[in-house]
Amino acid sequence: MIPQDYHIHTNFSADAKPSMAEMCERAIALGIPEICFTEHADFTPGDFCSYYFKPDAYFQEIERCRAIYGDRLTIRAGAEMGESHLFPYETELLMDEYPFDFIIGSLHWVRDELVLSREYFEKRSKHEAYQRYFEELLVMVRVGGFDVVGHFDVVKRYGYDVYGPFDPHEHEEIIREVLKACVEVGIGLEVNTSTLRRPVNEPSPSLPILRWYRELGGDIVTLGSDAHELEHVGYALQDMVELVKAAGFERIAVFENRQARFVPI
Ligand SMILES: [Zn+2]
Ligand SMILES: [Zn+2]
Image (cartoon, rainbow, N blue to C red; front, side):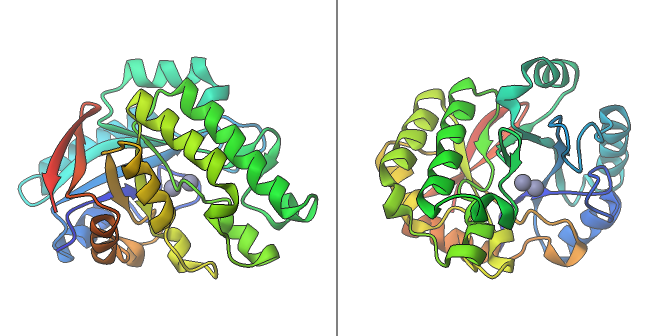
């Protein structure tokens, strides 16, 4: 059984088409008991999703779907905040005004450069490209304000296309520093399977990073498909339960009103 899918986009995100109701029906058909809609909340100039998210309409639709599907599916309200450390005012406003259950903090940009592009890698050495990403992620985690880091090493998505496989051991020091900061402020990791659908073909993060997080005392893990399409709901999440167990975790986290609770796996 897939226990949860805590990273799903709908047409409240600029880059996804399915409706919330369609995603709910898909999750029910797959027997997933709990999902979270984590729409892009982006403010970075130039981002495709910048200022697209409409929270009033989103929460209305959440309530409508809870009324229809609530007896078969637990529906959590979430957002995937991009570069939240650079937009403290916008982030705080959104968090204070709306009853979110769960917030993912994601780094898609390092300053004015999108890391989800070949260009970011072609401009600099492999080492520098990865190092810069994790250094910026460290700043984002230290500022905090979210519950889990989204796709922790997503920078490998295009890094792989330019430089081949990503070896976290080559950046172990800075990665451990980010993980330590996560543990200190109580931020978790999600295991994201969108990178399994790309040539890089491994989850984000992969097993060594999950193990390091566990070793350092981290205990908050969620599972997310990062579905932007119906057929990706729940993608490979059953396998991720096994991965998380292999990393030393015996439970995953569920969130309500930004509070974590743990369920055994
Ligand atoms: Zn993302
Ligand atoms: Zn996403």
